[in-house]
Image (cartoon, rainbow, N blue to C red; front, side, top):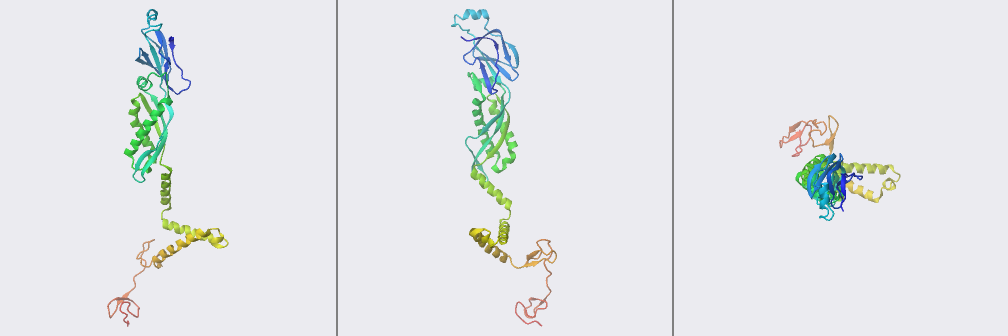
Amino acid sequence: MAKIMEVIEYFDNTGNHLVHRVPEDGSGETKIGSQLVVRESQQAVFFRDGKALDVFGAGRHTLTTMNLPILTGMLKGIFDGKSPFRVEVYFVNSKVFTDMKWGTSEPIPFRDSELQMIRLRSFGIYSTRIKDPQLFVNKMVGTQGLYTTEQVDGFLKNVIVSRLADYLGENYKTILDVAQHYDELGTGLKARLQEDFGKYGLEMVDLYISAITPPPEVQARMDERAGMAAVGDLNQYMKFKAANAMGDAAKQEGGAAGAGVGMGAGIGMGMMMPGMLQQAMASGPMAACPKCGTQNQTTAKFCSNCGGPMAVAPATTPCPKCGKPVAAGSKFCNDCGAKLE
C-alpha cells in the first residue's frame, strides 16, 4: 500500500540529481493540509491523477487535494485499500550544473581551403540549468523516479558536436583561422544551441571550447609550414648553415673527419658548394660603391644599399672611321679596330 504523506521533501546529498520523484516507485497518497517543503535550489512539480497541476518555488506550501480524510476512508474499500486520488511530486534541481564536459567521439569532416579535406577533434566544457521544470519533466524524465546528469549528458554532448560541425562549415574557411577566434566561436555556438536546449526546458549558461585539433599528420604539415616561414630565404639560410659547419669543422683537430662530421656531412657540403660557387660566378664581377663601399655587380647603375650612382660614365670620342664612341685615351677602336691618332 502506498504511504500516506504528511510532509513531502527531498534533500540531494550527491549534487548530481536533476530530478527526484517522491515517491520513487508507484504513486502516493496525500490529504488536505499536507506540507510540501521546497529548498532554495529546487522547484517542485506537483502531479495529481497523472496531470501536472502546478510548479512550486522555494518555501513551505500547504497542499489542497481531493483526498479528504472521510472520503478516503470510505473509498479505500472500493479501490483495494488505496486512495483513488494519486499524487507524485518531482523535485527539480534548479542550480547551474558546471564543468560538464563535451567532446567529439568521432572526428568531424571539414573542407579546409588550404589543407583540403581534414578531420577535426574538439572538446571543451559547458554549464546548464533547468529553466522550465514542468517541460523538462514531461519531455525528458517521464515517469522515472530518479534522473541524473549522467543520463542527459550524452544527449547534450551529441547536440553540441552536431551544431559545432555546422557552425564551422558555415563560418570558417580554414582551421588556421579558428584558434584565434575561440571566444567568438563559443559565443556563436552557444546562441545556436539555446533553441535546442530550450525545447527540453534547459538553458545553456556557458560554453567553452578548449581545443579544435586536426589529426597528427596534418599538425606535422602545419609545423613544417611554420618552420619554413621562420627560416625566410631558404637559399641564404643554407649558405649560413654550410659556412658555420665548415668553420666548426676547421676548429677541430683533423678537419671535418676528425670532428666527427662524417662522410654524410662531407658529401652534403660537397654537393652544396658547386651550386653556391656557380651562383656566385653567375652573379658576375663585383664593384664597391664609391659612396658607401657596398659590393654591387659591375653592371649596376645605382647602389643597392645607399642608392647612389655606382660610377661616373667615362668621357668618349667618336671613332674617325666607324663613328662609334671610344673611351678617351684609347689607342684602337673597340668596334672596328682602327688605330686612333
